[in-house]
Amino acid sequence: MIGIIGAMSEEVDIIKDIMVDVSEIKISDRTFYKGKFNDKEVVLALSGIGMVNATITTTLLINEFKIDKIYFSGVAGSINKDVNLGDIVISDSLVEYLFDATAFGYKIGEIPRMNSSEFKPNEILLDAKNKLKNEKIKYGKILSGDKFVSSKSEKEKLGKDFDALAVDMESAAIAHTAVVLGVDFLIIRSISDSITDDSTIEYSEFVNIAANNSKNILLKLI
Image 1 (cartoon, rainbow, N blue to C red):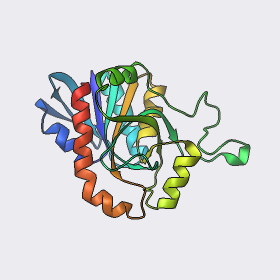
Image 2: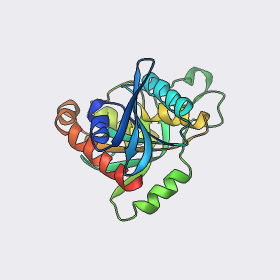
Image 3: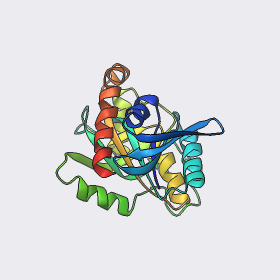
Image 4: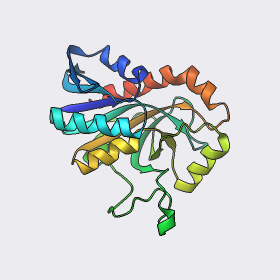
């Protein structure tokens, strides 16, 4: 079974609207939509915003529906001058950039007592690169943390410090959970705000366009 996650209604509704044979399943306070997307059996979930919400939803999705791979479809902010509004970024690694154990000699973003603090997709990424070889996709690192990054200077610093392309509030938590539970995953993010001090304005204007861009890529993969 394929799992699909979006953090916000803007990201989930445009996917649900083109699903067929949809049944709604409530687990705790979460709603899951089981049906067909592009003629494939899927379960779609609205995670809610933030790292904990993303972790809870991913765990329930995997354990309750026996998911064997997960796609995330949504929006993110650019932290690289070459990544612009509407661009599609697919992660080849993800980092929880706000994790701070530097007092014990770790680098920012490193999680103590784990084999790696970068969470990476496996075969699902190779499949995506093959299916999307004629698309303009940027592959690289995505950062996640419980903060909406709105200032140009902070975005530029994050991009430089981590050699990353985009930042959001859920992807690394989904990736971390999927890796621990043994499920392959792919994060698809369309850029809703660029490297600018006007990020909140751009986001409000472009979030729906960006979410639709991400959904269109998902259609090519599933």
